[in-house]
Amino acid sequence: MSDYRPAGWPEETYTIVRRVRVDAEEISADPRSRRRRTIEAGQLALALEGTATHAYAVSFIVTNIATHNDPNSGETVLDVEAWFRRRTDIEDRIREAKLGAALRHLPSGYQGVNQVWTWAALLAGNISTLLQALTGIDKHSRAHGARLRHELLCVPALLIHHAGSPILRPPTGDLLLPAVLARIRELPAAA
Image 1 (cartoon, rainbow, N blue to C red):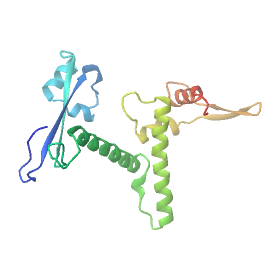
Image 2: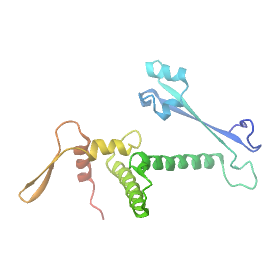
Image 3: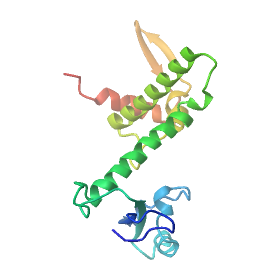
Image 4: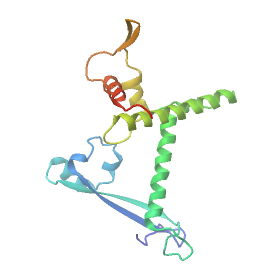
């Protein structure tokens, strides 16, 4: 915790600084990666070229939420940081619903259409999260709905019937659909 506060902010404002060690092989090659942007440029260059085995990601939270320093509060710095991190998870879900599940098409002129579209988008986001949790599709972070839609749902496949049983035949190659179907089949039966 630091006493830093931007000019013009309330007197009780303080800064929480979080520093996390990141192994070089865990640093994303994608320049849009959030974690990559929190690593100082010199450290990042050394880690990416293989000179350094790790780097440190640094993030800041500037807030005026009272902590144990205030006798009237039961919050600790860790509680405040956890609250902010949960909030960003929720914001990510809302953004994903807008972009990945097409809430950007709202509003419609009909309230019923808006309600159905909203529930469908939220259900799609939750199914996406559940599917990833059950199958372990994405090892590094939660895959976004657009990726799942393109690699899992919009895959051309052939549905045939053999001896009265439907058989799904996806195209050959390194695709996500066969791996997910195999993992779902391996799950234990619900009790």
